[in-house]
Length: 248
Image: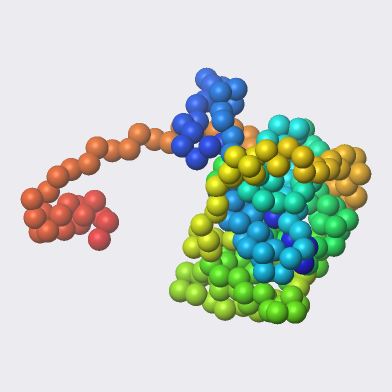
């Protein structure tokens, strides 16, 4: 079974972002990591490989610096890595198109993606990828069960009202949610082995049908300062405070 796990290079989750006077992000001191939801995708791909054999490919779109996060996925246990090279910032549809180029070349049985990236929280790319591939998809997976013949997957999806069970034929795109698994740490032997694993680069100019950029970020602003909290002595006083603020 061939599985592709897509990953994105995102700022470390405890990073305090700073802005210039002109509203631009200060990025020169930022440390990066694999998007946490994508860690779940890599881990689930590894678990499925342990059950069905085959291989796991870590795939990303970005500049050479993104190779560091691919090395993390390789150290976790992925068999090889692929990067579609783009140094300029892309919008979600462009990223999905670049991913689709790599997926078509590999013809995997399954593509696993994090449900969203913690930097922009758009959650658009996996669904766009499924549409471009004309594959079925299931989102917010908290459990993935692949049948013995690896032709179908039963996915437990987290929805607002609880859980929804979805069955999809493979190949398919599935996005991962927090309750799916607990990602493993990269061991020292894994880190050493990762340096010897193959990592391919697809030049951006080879991506077929890349659309013009249709969306861009025009600026950033700081969140307003959080109001200082108040201590109340009773439930009645709490209710009065909430009513006065039109919260109940």
